[in-house]
Length: 211
Ligand SMILES: [Mg+2]
Image (cartoon, rainbow, N blue to C red; front, side, top):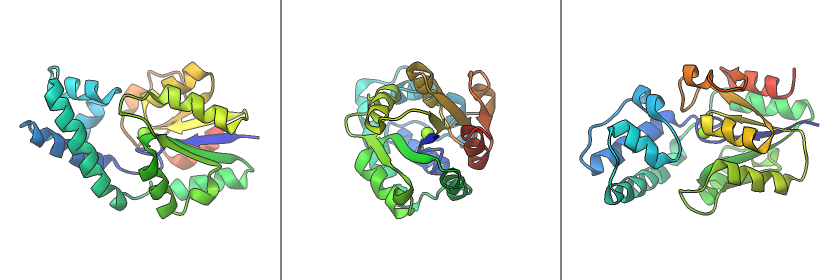
């Protein structure tokens, strides 16, 4: 039986415009100019501090990083309740359920906020587990995935995520990953990965189900 592990931000949750707005508020707080979505996708990387280094073309100072991190999370927390699901998220989840697959959500976002949003969108009943970040901003997807897989206790899991980081985490743990090109990265960057690429969540679900 197939198990699909969904990423949240940039995958099931269509939050790119919100993320860019919050990045701009954090940049304004350190006196830097705003960016547009293409700038975000040009530079997006993990850890997030490196994203800001790349974006600004210089190393952000520790005090700037503290401001950025605080402002981004405070603003995102306020905006999160307005973030919609990706337009075909529900259809893709229904597809996996109809095929007899099980599903879970694994995210680097704060666990309590994630769980609240998953419930608000009526998705909790479809998920055997919902795991977010309970530690700190320095946590890695790879480590969270390892813990998530242990808790699931099964096999046959495939990840669906929008970030290079998702694919690399899956690869290092030895599970498959379908990358979705509607989120944090330009497709041309995803094409450098050794992973199938989907341009919709329904397509990603179909690939993950092996159809
Ligand atoms: Mg993501």
